Amino acid sequence: MYGNKRILAVIPARGGSKRLPNKNIKELCGKPLIAWSIDAGLKSKYIDKLIVSTDSDEIAKVSKKSGADVPFIRPDYLATDSASSFDVIKHSIEFLGNNGEHFDYLVLLQPTSPLRTAEDIDLAIEELFSKKANSVTSVCEVDHSPLWSNTLPKNHSMNNFIKKSARGKNSQELKTYYRINGAVYVCLIKSLLEEKSFISKSKSFAYVMDKKKSVDIDTELDFIIAEIILKNHLD
Image (cartoon, rainbow, N blue to C red):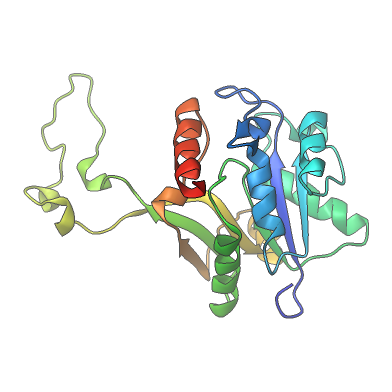
């Protein structure tokens, strides 16, 4: 709780994963991938309730063992490739509301961001309240400036590949660009439900995270990178 505002954290975790099978419960440095996000959420100073929304009995079992509340098994229509994150979170909010539990703010924690810490979550929440924002989204610096990127035609011609404004400049001379890293989304539930977006159209701000903590697990390579970072940090 922050002041008199109640905060709900939801970790959405589908059972199916095409690129990396069973990734949400795949062991990472001694514990299931999803457990890293559960631990971070449970250690937050402000989160009042943390739940996992899943369609998988196996993920539900692992999540409960890791300390999370799993109040329901997600309906089949929310376990398809076409089901949006908004629909999944809306279902969670409505389910809890129908059971007498009401919240003012939502924290979305994707299980594929194991390096995000309780401190990151709390700083993002504090950013939202200090700025009186509708939403705060975690970001990190991009690895390479998008000014050095472009599409290619069929013949792979690089004529005008780099814009004139970026030609002849080194990386230090270019502006810093950021990307959404998917680790933390904090938003006013009223704004979320009205706009159907975790990033509000107004009064929306960024929480900047370190690139090292911004690994998003999608492939086996991502998993290996996260493992290396965690092992170096834990040793």
